[in-house]
Amino acid sequence: MSRGRPTGVRSRRRFGSLLAAVLACIALSASACTKEMPEAGTPGARAYRAKCSGCHVLFHPSLLTAEMWKTQVRLMEEGEFKRRGLKLTDEERRLIVDYLSAHAGVR
Image (cartoon, rainbow, N blue to C red; front, side, top):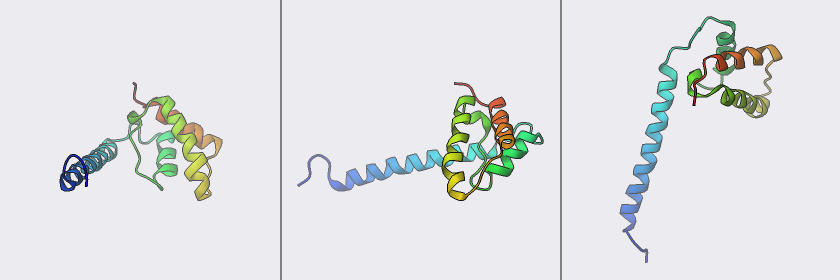
């Protein structure tokens, strides 16, 4: 015998929480995709688009701080890039990190 609310109420509440979380993720992803990229024609923006958009949507640089972008690029290289057999050159890494940092958000 369960305590508290009947199982149906708990299941509906759990489903409602899960649905809210999924919708929030979709909304954040959509907003990240709909903002126009700053200075889209620069070498940094082109490198970001060329090296990152093949695996995931391009997130607007203002979504993370400069330090967060540096960490994220490093984690991508150590994880997903390595698993896929991909590699950034030193120049590509510099261009991408400099571009993302120049347009990063503040916290």
